[in-house]
Length: 544
Image (tube, rainbow, N blue to C red; front, side):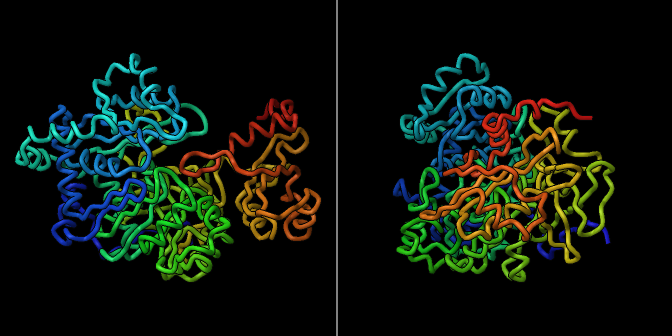
């Protein structure tokens, strides 16, 4: 049997825009609470949300934002972010998500590459003065004609809405098509400039909808969303999964804080919780964890980076999330391609990324020949279907290098598929370590290290070696109050995993370099290791 699967479904794809879908939700349950933003003291029902989104939409139209115009948003998680997300969709503008952690060069690149003409920004976030940073680059961004600072210009935008009638907005909405581009999200590549994945209503609305279906969302669900809106995890798995089912979006803070998350889950009686693995680890390891009542939790999503089996088990048993699921995907696929089901067998739910999503195809191919590999054999995961992006914005060469002639999206991830169609991610093609001809998958070693009682988190990388080509290195974060030496960890590994998989180098850390979304930056770890271990000569060795 070959590693190919297609997602059957009795539920058809949604053939509508995001605005049309939101209107239907309002008609079904307008008095249901839609959005709660704890740190801003904000609450709105679906009917109130619809009215506020319409007002923002008319305000943007009053500022001459037209169909296809790029509207940038540079802000942490706030209620205004959500309103802008749905307002731009209702007027056919393309929302450009800008990473709250980006610096001036990255901001300038995103504004110019996408051609943002209208920018919504917060005044500041953490140590970054957004207004000052924008001032540094604005003269080099010829397309940018207006910047609206949330704390200073929001009310004026709402007042301007009065000059645009509801009938004009309705006419604009009626002109839109569900295949229109609606969102540009920049992917954080490890090399070169970021690429703007261009997504349509059809892409992200359906992906959010089927994620909600998998989680069995109804209007009774209250979903705690501590992941950033600028990323698909927040705005699609979070917002669109909720709004397409009439569930409540609950936002605990501008950015992730484990204590705020647990406080919000308790206060708002949340039924679902999202996070990348490091977020769940932060909550489970928090000294106040036992003080919070999280008994209302039923389900949720762990995604964004490889999900350790041991962490999944703890989330189920210590947090009560018996129906937690794992999602796998990438920005370019809207983002989810596979997801575990709430009623999957326990081992399948904690040790795989589930099976193919409805209306999606996946296959696993030999990276060199492109041929589909047999079941259980590792290869590159490819995905095809409604979820595949329209392309990289204004970058046909990069698009052609990622989406092949048959519309298969090549993910760059190494995976296996078992006889039942469950997928396991074993690493990145570029992350795979080749030590003396042996292929080593970091994920396998990481999963093993999670079983060590003294280790809270572990990340494995390959570092240059003149003798073997590459050697294995582990960065580990110990549990609070625990101690361990390199020798003790080697002894723990010996006899349990193959000798060539036992890390040659160890580094004890308090944290890992990571993106705002919690993705570990292994290329940064590798660069640091080369310097610290004096491996520059090996790193510079030429290979065939």
